[in-house]
Image (tube, rainbow, N blue to C red; front, top):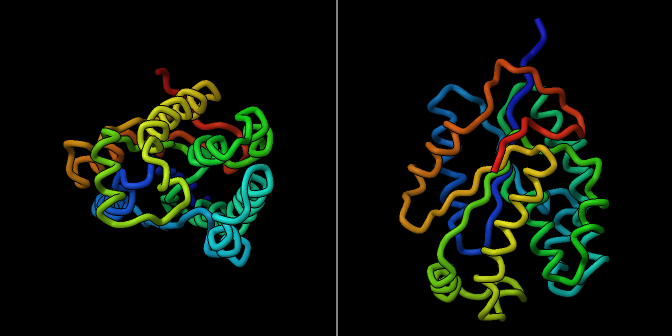
Length: 217
């Protein structure tokens, strides 16, 4: 009997929006629902991913966008696809939506980024977490600057707007996207909403670069 293909969930959103706590809550929620969860991150933990992460403050623009994309293609081939084919539900902390926001903020046109990522495996559910810019800014100030973008006080508001636009871009390409405001919700509440929004696992979905099930705006 063929092993059912696992679900692929990508979580993106501005720094300080609560991705880490939400991902942990989602991992627990899905495990409680009987799923085997494989948790991963981008840039990946491979040598290329570590290099990309360590040098993201020095390498900018098109060069960084190409590095991120190269790491993504390797990540899909060596970690994401094998886990999905084993039947695991994959949760990825940052994926293509972050590219459409962060690399665009770094001066790279969205059209170039879409072309660079044209053959990636799209998630079954792209989750975009958002919150009020003021709340995001206070969280960043509390935990300290971790990225050169954090030095710009206007960045939280710009990121929120661009992630909302990234969700529209993905939905226009037939990717099922879910935008959730975490300002007044607990991680457990957000995780439950995400789990409930997953596509029906009984509907076959090949592990290929083809886009996922559509969802209207």
